[in-house]
Length: 499
Ligand SMILES: [Zn+2]
Image 1 (tube, protein in one colour):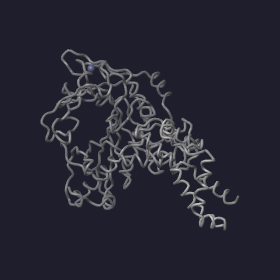
Image 2 (image 1 turned 30 degrees about the vertical axis):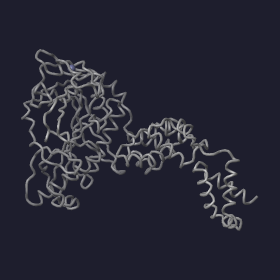
Image 3 (image 1 turned 120 degrees about the vertical axis):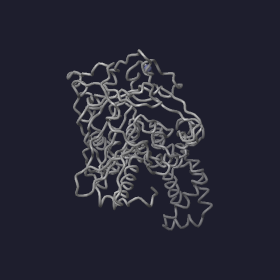
Image 4 (image 1 turned 135 degrees about the vertical axis):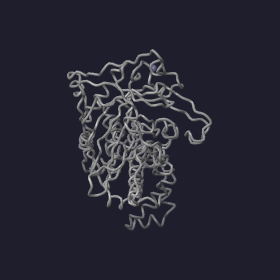
């Protein structure tokens, strides 16, 4: 559907109530795989981390990774879920080249965690997203398509399989249908995944990096005609690898489905793929129903029956929800509400916290990340955390400013040099001789020279027109290559002219 065939977003929400549902896969950061002792280390040579179990060779027998069960229970508890006293794994049967066994070990009608909810802050409004279940499963391997420009299978000459990821533990978190969000549906979807990511990150059980695939999101969207209570046919959009694309994809699907329904058409139940380049969804395979997978209990694994004592001991390890942590930090740092919201929205809370821990004042830490560094991240198309600068280096730059050794302009140069990999701020300042000139005789000489060079300006300042001092400050700064503190230069000029 071309862009001008879509129904306008305002018209969609005037005629329909959107219903969203989100499925999030979290890759657990265990040392070994879900059912064998193979390493889960990322980036190893293809097929170097495999064994008969994760390759599904005949006669091999899986064993459950206790650490993965523990991490899954902790996720369930943090999402307010009940934890099953007894549950089993199931085989989800289907063929795909990245899965050697022809089935995926997952959980079907007996999930480990069920019936929870997450409070999501959407621009200051709290929305409760109900959680259906959080269950354990194993990841599939990875197909590498060779010879196509895009890395996709279309146009590829051949495909290679890497089974290192096969068998890595996953937790799939599924919401119940989220109703009543209206025009806010895209923002709610985004805020939910951001909150979920923060909750899981705080637990320390996954590094939850969307761009690296350790957190993956599929978004279900359907429309319900206003005044009716029957859920519409939904589509499931895959390949959402950033918070921004979740929001855009939900919005796009609402407008696409709205156009079809408004024209009297019917929505096809299918998976769709999000194309980041053109910001649109395209049809994938028609969506299977659960019965197509012929689920049955996994006969090679014993049931998982976590004791209540264990569950309660794990409950005691659950940190406060991110929302409460933010409120406490805001108080501690003395930030205004909008300042804190911006920091959270920019995913900079941990960066700011680490910068403060390294010695910077809270407002200084916030300003570096939210202005200078944000600008550089945007220009490079990176997230703040991906910039080649550590919170400790940012704190060191601020420390040099506080010592009077750098002014803002030179500090920005130092930041650029750190990003370019030239070393720590102090090393760069020393190597480039960048520190501001603190030597008063050198400053005085420059001030004297510029007063002599601008007699008319000096006269105006003596006559009381002190705003003219800007001209002289500029001239002195230029002579000193910007390496002076403007406030000190100003004071020195005025003192010299008065004397
Ligand atoms: Zn293995």
